[in-house]
Length: 484
Ligand code: NAD
Ligand code: SIN
Image (cartoon, rainbow, N blue to C red):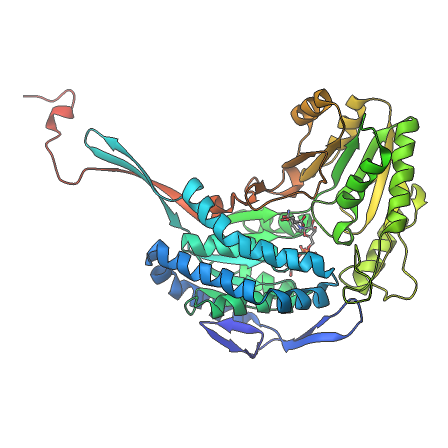
């Protein structure tokens, strides 16, 4: 391939300004291209529009066959792609290999979801049959985030293609290489020209894309951008909006026993992917007693043992850097502004690039903390007097993505499940537990009730109900109140 845009099956240089992708581990530039301008975006949407009727009309088995080839390509390229993703994001290789696995796994999960949740279903009727079919919307714009730059856009693109939609994809400006590799794999799988188009660039390119005549915006990213898109499309109810946004996720520990076992779940909830998962726990809520204090101490002690380092160094890391030096500087400033009592500082790491920070723990009991997502490995801890207070504290957010309870008491779990407001609610599992075979999405500021993952099938096609008789029969007798 050559170029940053892929339109109508052709790679070419974008007509916009030059942009780079920087390896956060080393500061090295690993991708440099002229990105798209507004005219490229117009071309990309036009190509997707032209390709739509033939792609939608193609027998579903043929679309499935192409996506199965895509899965094979991803599987064959996993080692190379995982290294590229680690280089571009700094994530550990075990994580990027898992990301590639999720991308390949998405194909079969989406085929099953399409059949189960959409597809075609019929019932016999006295006159013939009632048939429920699903039709694709048209041209879908996909805007991807940087934290899972393959898995998350893939989670929109695969079900959209399966349903018969065509796609214009703009990856995050932080991870253009990952976006390019995804599209190269689709190209290698034989996706026809115009069915998937790529435009690289930042927000201006995203803005140019949403200003076109698109039929849907499938977005994974920040709540602020999600709110902007809601306003932008307020007068366009015909445009499908699937908004997968951030969270300020609570994790409650109550009557949970062994503090070390609890700490292992907390650390995996809060610090995995250097805190750069939308589903990471940001707020730990514990009992205001010796058991609660033991959990705080155990989390701080376990955080101390986590290997923080480069993905390709001698020792396998638990976590790498944040996405950039800038993200680290912003996270450190955000932590400073938060206040509270530092239990363990989130701080730069000696001997590593400025993008690396250590996991932090800050006690905020009795303090009002702004209800914001800090996309970094910083966990707030709050001590409360009762389980009901813990649930109230957990729900004290405008977000509602993931939430967790760590407890050995089934009655606590049943009560928690009834009261907590979130789209992913886990028990004695990390808040980051998610699967392609389940829906994934949030309430409140975390989304718009169009969850992704298994339920992505729902927003990629619309239902059509038909009542059908194969020939004209005399229904005169059905008309009531008819004169002889
Ligand atoms: P972001 O919102 O900054 O950017 C995401 C994409 O949208 C990028 O491609 C960006 O260029 C584009 N974009 C952003 N604002 C835009 C605008 N005004 N107009 C046009 N395009 C715009 O998000 P990010 O920093 O890349 O990702 C991190 C965020 O994503 C976090 O808030 C995280 O919680 C969230 N996230 C959510 C989920 C989920 O499934 N709910 C999953 C992963 C990440
Ligand atoms: C995330 O937590 O950022 C994404 C979770 C997933 O889809 O696995």
